[in-house]
Amino acid sequence: MASITKRQNKWQVRIRLSNYPTITKTFNLKSHAMAWAKLKEIQIENGNLEIDSKPTKETVGDVLARYLKERTSKKKSSEVEEIKIKRLMLDPIFKIECNNLRPIHIIKFRDERLQKVSGGTTLRDLSLLSHAITIAMKEWGFTLAANPVKQITKPKQNPPRDRRLELGEEELLLKGCRAALNPYFKALVVVALEIGMRHSELLRLEREHINFDQRTAYLPTTKNGSPRTIPLSSRAIEEIRNIPTHISGKVFPISETALRGQWRRTMKRTGIKNLRLHDLRHEATTRFFELGLNIMEVSSITGHKDLKMLKRYTHIKAQDLALKLGELPVVDIRRMV
Image 1 (cartoon, rainbow, N blue to C red):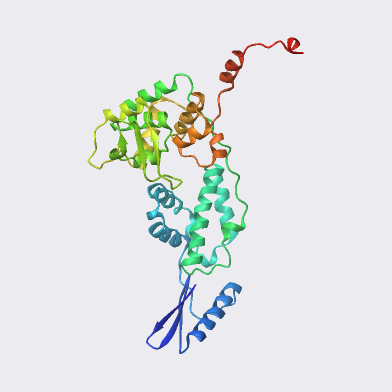
Image 2 (cartoon, rainbow, N blue to C red; image 1 turned 90 degrees about the vertical axis):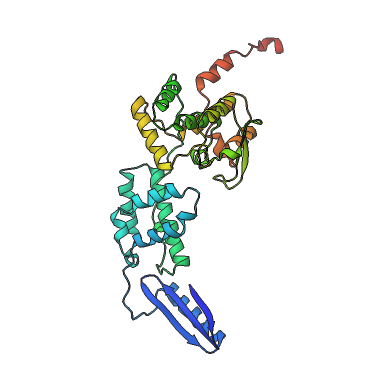
């Protein structure tokens, strides 16, 4: 919170505070500067630092705007988070001055979000806001007594989705994709169904990282931070071969915003209900298990590091299991006695 720098033969302490001008004081000895800085930090933590200056008017929105500029822009999924932040900043809570922010404001924000979106989405919104406030307190000199987001009850996470394609839906989906104006959209959907890649990974996929002879794709950056090489099915390879090579080098030169918009229009065009883009990853992963791949083989393709998380993608249909059980030979237990 306090920084100490040497200026000529003296030591200057600078303390940057959210909503207040920077406090500075110069000492002849470094030990005196450190002692004074420590005293002020203790006063700040105890909430009894006396400041004569009038507070500035920085708002929660100002914090999020700075977070967007300094943090979000460096993330892999920056486009998605930027859209989320700009949408959230329309909420009245972001007009509140930081020094006036209280848990009651966060509770109101939480409850209003829960009326519009799911518990999982609300939880992610709160996590984003909490991280921005924590960064502001730790690194930007904001002097809130505590992070108010951490003082409220969080909404429950949604139960994991297990939506799979029903009979005839894949054909209907691909027919709708072919009607799209974007020449890359249908191929992206097919590859997602075949390989189970995250759509963010598909959007970052470079053509130079496709080995057509070995039928593999190399992903240098992934969500979990580890690069991986994944196998491509014959159908996926064929789709990639047949789409135009783009000057950008991207296999699928589509923005996140355009992809989501295209998906919504396709759902409307086809009349398919309650199917999300991420459901294609679940569908592909489940098909891998139905083909007989073990959990480690599937993990190497999908990139799941947490095998517990991977298990929730294996909702094999009960009727399929019943058919397999019906094929087992009947054993007469009496003959075994």
